[in-house]
Amino acid sequence: MTALPHSPSRRIGQQSASSSQKLRIFLIEENPLAASFLKSILCAHCDVETLCLQALVNHTMKSGTAILVVDPNTLPLSVSQLLLRLQQTWEDPRIVVLDFPPAKPEWLPLLPLGIRGFVPYSEAHTHLKEACQAVHAGKMWMPRGLLEQYVETSRTVSREKFNLALTDRESMIAELVRQRLSNKEVAFRLQISESTVKFHLKNIFTKLQIHDRAELLPPRQESPSQRIAT
Picture (cartoon, rainbow, N blue to C red):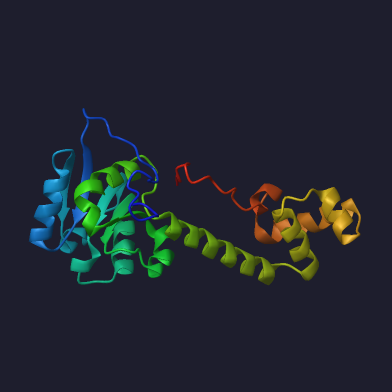
C-alpha cells in the first residue's frame, strides 16, 4: 500500500521473493468465498493454508516466523482478541491485515501485537503477494502516514513517562539531550557545571532503566525513499 494515492511505485519495503522457494502463508478467514479468492491470488507463488478460528484453539506454541493474512471483517471476535490469540499460538507472528482504506487510527495501539502490513481489498489482487514477501523479509507494508502517527504517539507517551518519572531539572536535561546537545552545551544552557549535568544524567539513566544518552535520543527521520524496517 502506498502512503499517497495513485503512486503504486512508491512503496515501503518492496522485495521480490526467490522464484525457487515458495513462501508459506496462513490465511485466517471465515468466509469460504473470500478464502477462495485470496488463495487464487497467492497460491501461484506461495504455499497457503487456510485456518478458521477453531483451528487456533488449544494449539501449543509454534516456533519460528509465521506469515498470517487476516481478514478481520469476516471474524466473529475483535481484532485485539484475535491478535492476542495469534501471539499465543506463534512465536513470531507477522500479520498482514486486509481492510478498507484508509487505515483506521484505531489500528495504532494494535501495531505492537504483530501487525506488519495493511492491504486494502481493492489492492489485494495486485499487492497482497508483495506485502507478504516484504513482511517475511522483516519489513513493513503500510501507509507512511499511519507509521508517522504511530511514531508520534509513541513519542508523546514516552515524554509523558519522562515527566512522571523525572524531577523538573532532570526533565529539562533529558529534553536537551534529546535535542542532541552535548553535556557542555547543556551545562551552558542551564548555567550549571558539567559535573552536575553528569550527576543528573546518572539519575535519569537509573530512573528510566537505560544505559546511556543514546537511548534518550529520538530516531532519526528517514527520507521517503528509504524503506522502514522493523
